[in-house]
Length: 475
Image (cartoon, rainbow, N blue to C red; front, top):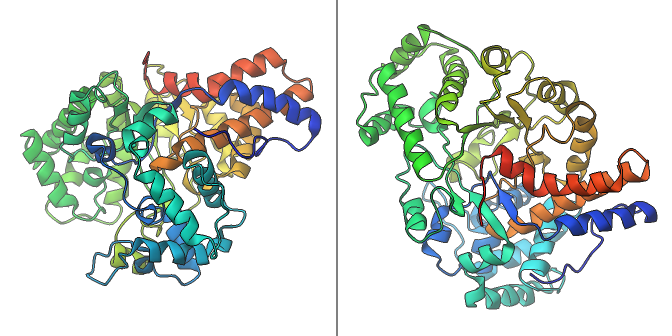
């Protein structure tokens, strides 16, 4: 990749600490990327087709971008976001790009601007600052690069230095893209692209189409999902298929972190919902119970559990009605962990065979709840700041908040959590720079010797995520 145009980007301003941070960052800068949680479409790499125009690559699928523009009155349809209600959508990539450039000032100080600027320069080698006046110039420069063979997905994957990339699929996915990747030597156990088991659409009774999804789960597995026992058997079957396709973890995006052991009552709750007679509270109780069921399954099959709670999905109902899920209409909420996780931790929290990686959208819980929990239970690790929190400021605050109680080694390394393939190296680079600055401060304050800081930054960037997510030895 091109040499970064701002070599001291995000490093400390104080000269002594900056010098130390430069040394530490240099140890991590070129390490392979471990991307254990994200949402890149595996078809991108399976098919290895040229990327579309710059707008469809960098703007249309990026809800960080489209939600900011919506907040200033720019409809997603004007940015090419597909509609679900048949309303007209802009299809001209250059017009979309110009609209985006006209509003570039909205992104001042945001991580979106940082990621996009670094993508322009470090991925595409385009140094022209974006503005309304330069919109066409930047568009044409990026489009010209996208026409080159070196900018097809697999070529970029190699240039980015990605060692392993985890995608995220529903149990209803046929995993055909992963099968193609495996046939090409890119997927499966030991491959460079692996899947992640994300069962929300067959677990959450409030998910659109849940009854139909559960029926489909039964059809795929040959199990009778009309019964709770058959439902659990079907889930175990799909977990086995995902593991055969390379999965090392499951992912659970529940509204809360609540866990609960319903015992025999779980079958009653399930049967009520299957008959369309769910009672108030059944959906939350069943989600909470299923986290314990999945923990039990993980003890058997070894999948790492990731828990991503705290998002109020589709809060912008107009946006959901017009454009569907995952287009920027979700909002964080306060999330409680100490009491919510107690049933799971009482049952399995001290069992080192289980690994649960906890994330939050409520950073106030880092010091009060999450760091003490991770520092006190063998099964827990802290995931990196995620989604609304994946900014330089929160990455710094995360280290400051959790290190004193959980240390470095109860964290799980960085996750980019992105659909934007070309931003992966940029996001990992930002995290490595922030960690270099934090460690440099500890060295400058004589709280950590330089040799230990050097070992730690390599662990944070590479060894920890590789170990926690069980990726093993890969080329």
